[in-house]
Amino acid sequence: MRNIITYAEETLANFDRLPFNRVDSLILSWAAYLRLPEERLEAYDWRGVRLGDLFRAEDFGCLFQRHWDVPGSRQLLTAVAASPRFRDIRVMGYTQQMDAGLEKQFAAVTLQWEDRWGYIAFRGTDSTLVGWKEDFNMAFQYPVPSQEAAQRYLAQAAKHCKGELRVGGHSKGGNLAVYAAAHSAQEIQERLVRVYSHDGPGFLAAVLQSGEFQTIAPKLDKTLPQSSLVGMLLEQQENFRIVKSDRVGLWQHDPFSWLVEGNDFLLQEELTPDAQYLDKTLNRWISSLTTAERERFVDSLYALVDAAHIETLAQLRAQWQESIPAILKAASQLDPDTKEFLFQTGMALVALGVKNFPELLEGPGEDPPAAVQVRKKG
Image 1 (cartoon, rainbow, N blue to C red):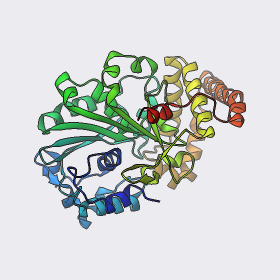
Image 2 (cartoon, helix red, strand yellow; image 1 turned 60 degrees about the vertical axis):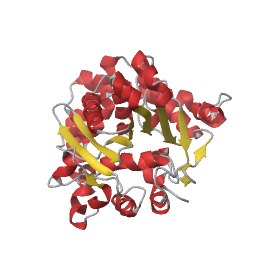
Image 3 (cartoon, one colour; image 1 turned 90 degrees about the horizontal axis):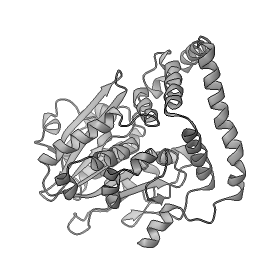
Image 4 (cartoon, rainbow, N blue to C red; image 1 turned 135 degrees about the horizontal axis):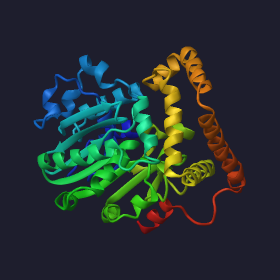
């Protein structure tokens, strides 16, 4: 089956002949994961560099650093650098910011096609534990530092982009795109054509009910795989379309696993029963905790990992023989009140999972998910 790599290899028509679509969006949002060398100054400022000119073997060690799928990313860069559809897009305004003190992991890049449109792409969560911590902070903090950074970046990028605007991202990047669009100035919103969230986490209920969110809701285009976990986190999800993936479980979050049919993703009617079960269990558990309890739970778990001086998930895997004992030692030194809190909070999740388990055996209910409603509307 085709994926975004084969789509980029085979789709040669320019954007006049074949209009921009959500597969293009996922490809351009992937560009935010590239780590551009500092010497490519024209990509960091607003002069820009051709996307095709990023294909330099001497930069590969930097470009794909901390990528989840280095071979897939290399194949995709090869495809877009050669493609007449993508190679002349200009890459500009690249920025990446990491601040452990603020618990912030942010990166963005702007892609300009001729004088016709600009696409502002926000990076999703990378392999750093700071990045994952900021994701978890969304359960109790609004806005998180990267959301505020995304709003500022969009305002700056809009000044340098010509024509229509599109914003998007994969994973946390999709959430940032929605936040930035919802909080942008009116003149920017009037130029916005579409806001893409590719398996991006949702928002707390109060956010989705706000006037800012409702203003841009008609322009949202959310896609997630049939066993989505990340994209279904938090409450009252936006309307979404479900994409078939050739992976299982959490690994479906990998954008290279999303199947493409023609010039669109291969869409499914509903989430899998196990995904519905996990999503319902986790979101009910989150909503059962107060804001203070969510913050305490997340901070306590992060403190245990931080005690092992681990900075990335790759480091955690590679050094597990040293890091796991360090984490267990830190857990043993927690004060009794914190130990009891973590235990009781974790047991509440287990109990809720057991309570919801019969629904997994019954399968999907009668009410169609949002994806079906969107597809029926065309």
